[in-house]
Length: 632
Ligand code: GLC
Image (cartoon, rainbow, N blue to C red):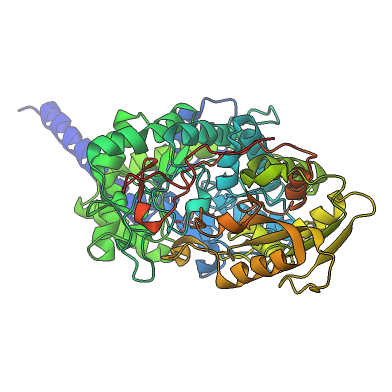
């Protein structure tokens, strides 16, 4: 070997050593959270003219493993331990657990709070904006003064997809006005048992109606009205994938609940025929995220099911958005927290609604990747899906300039009042008592929900479990609506307990507005879905002091009224109408027609539960079938 050969040999060896050194230090830096490839001044991903997929690829090429894992964490805002943690951990999402509000609980206070989180995230090394989410399931109802639309069961009774899209658009405008770009809605759950505490959050137990109204809602939220380059205005999240509503009574995994978070016992045929089609439609209309439920399919927690999440949702349905888990649901998967988290992520969950311990999460997932318990490819798939949604929302560009006056605007309240009118269902109308005639001059109004805006709004209103009483800025009670609609010269008396004088003559008409006090989720699981004794007493008292009685039910679910309704001259279901209670009177007094129809069967006895796809178990007919509704 000559000198020149020897020199070439050592040169090659030197280059190889240099390369190995570089590669090893790159790997080390990658785990250590630093990044070998320095960020240029104007990286491609910051150019809004670049196609989204290229922006995502470019951004990910700069991301360390730690920064990627941070994007998969969804943290409840009150769980942020130190100022700066959003930036330090590169957190991908934050949310208001319902009632998680700013100190200044006004629309401007919300705008300020969300902007603060977004600004902090933009100051991270790569400037990836955080995505802030809320449960806007009947308007931006965390915020006092917002328009509170009817809960979905009422929109289901309207059956009106055009209306539902408008409601979603108005809700989106109020969210944008406070800087919020993500809502955990619409609900795709389908109730089989009226004892469940979330019946009112659903449109129906009919997959076709759920598909139609759910798609309209997704379009209403996501379609961008501002015609800017942003393709998604507010991110919709059809939930809860899959089979929620079909759980069996007494199957809850939560010791405080009876059916919520329970087990859905259906076979795969029923799952595919009944529960999957609405989600398939949601994917087709472009839902950019889907939330998995807290229920189980048999004994398998949905969030742990690779078959349901990765295989069926992502591969079979072709879902390209990101899958987000539900509140703490990942850690309810059997095993310690480390095992539960890797199980969920390997099953296809992309963003984990922790919602508390983000430091533990980042540490665990980093360890899982280094140990090979989670592949880097799975992390990259999850982050690619999350970042795609963020670029589609235009989060990296200046956000859509929100108009704070949208919150609770008169136009939205007019829309909500119309939605209330379209949600009402007429169950009984002896001798054409309704609409209330001109010659009805004396009216007595009674009942626990007549002058109680908290009851007519239901839960998920400012507080998770709702509020009781008349405190809601800008709202109108059902009683106020009756007073407004009654003709000139009418005499309207009100007493919640129906303590009216027994002297003659009797009033021409008594209106009893009764029903449920607010509840949310499993706290609303009720073994006895009947009218309360107090409400029955009030109705019977009213019968003593008025010639005819109309009962208006303010309820989140069908109630067992089989024996009671026999004593009523007319019966109307108003569901949970929200802030615009005057919409009820619009129909009672004939300004608008009854058009609503029951979105699910109304059982006559508890023996008929669960309602299996509209056919009761005991095969006797329900009191009223699905889609029943009298008109005049
Ligand atoms: C709740 C609900 C879910 C909601 C989430 C965030 O537990 O199951 O519907 O979106 O937590 O509030």
